[in-house]
Image 1 (cartoon, rainbow, N blue to C red):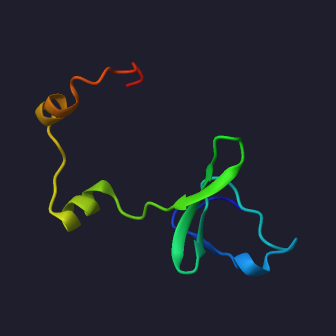
Image 2 (image 1 turned 135 degrees about the vertical axis):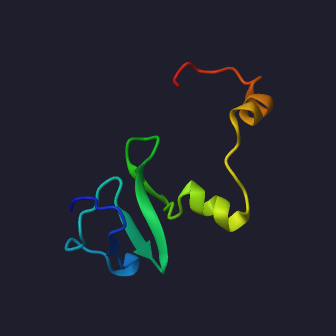
Length: 86
């Protein structure tokens, strides 16, 4: 199955068998009404993590926050050494 953003695959954890759909990394599933994304784990396998379903802008609107300015980022995090990756 190809991963399509927003597409959910219902999974019955209690009754899985060989006929269960084969899911891949990046796909989202729903378990007991909660959305999860299939992600790689540290051992080269896969695990489930809660799916991120809101954008940063939507979270800011809901919580009454805003994006930090460059000056604020520098003031709060400027002492942290950069790893050179971006």
